[in-house]
Image (tube, rainbow over all chains, first blue to last red; front, side):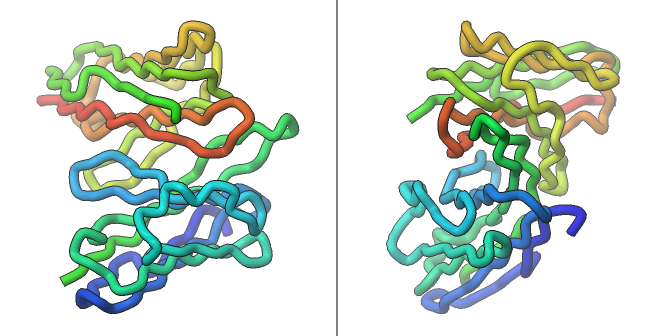
Length: 117
Length: 109
C-alpha cells in the first residue's frame, strides 16, 4: 500500500482478554518496528523485525506481549491477559534497509489506540 | 543502550518567532530523524539527517555526528507548528531506533 496501515484504529477491551493488533508495512520495506506511546509520553521501543526475524525482543514489557511477522510483510502484536496499564497507542513503522545495512527513514502508521477497562 | 536527550522539554512562542530545538545522543548513530507529532497524534516526518544540513521551507536541521548532536530550526513559527517534536536515533550497525522524550511546542496567535 501507499503507507503503513494499522488495524484496528481503536480497541476497547476488558481486563484479562487477549488482543491482536495488525500492521501492514509499506511494500518493499524489510524492516518493521513496534512502539508504544502512553498518554502524554514519548515513544517506547517494543520490537523490530528484519524480514521475518526479530533479533531484539528486549523492549517487550512482559511475557504477555508477543509479535510475529510472516512473509516479510504483515506483523501482528498480541497482548495476552490485558491489564489496565497496557492502555496506550501502539504505533507501527517500517523502513528500507540501506545498502550498508543501515536503517532507512522510518514511516509510521496512525496507530492502534488500546483501552483496557 | 544509546541515550537521547532533547531540550528544551517545553517551549511557548509567539507567532512569528524563531526557535532552535536540540537533540543530544550518547553514541555513534547511523540514522537520525526529526518528527512532528501533531495534536491528533499523527507522526509527520520532517528530516532524515544522520549528518549534514537540510532545509525544507521554514524548517531546517543540522546534525554534527562527530559531536553527537542535532539541531532543528523553526523560523517564523505558525500556530500549526504546535505539537511535540521528537528526535529519533539508531546506533551504527543496528536497527533499534530510540526516541527522545520530545519538545512540546505551543505557538500563540
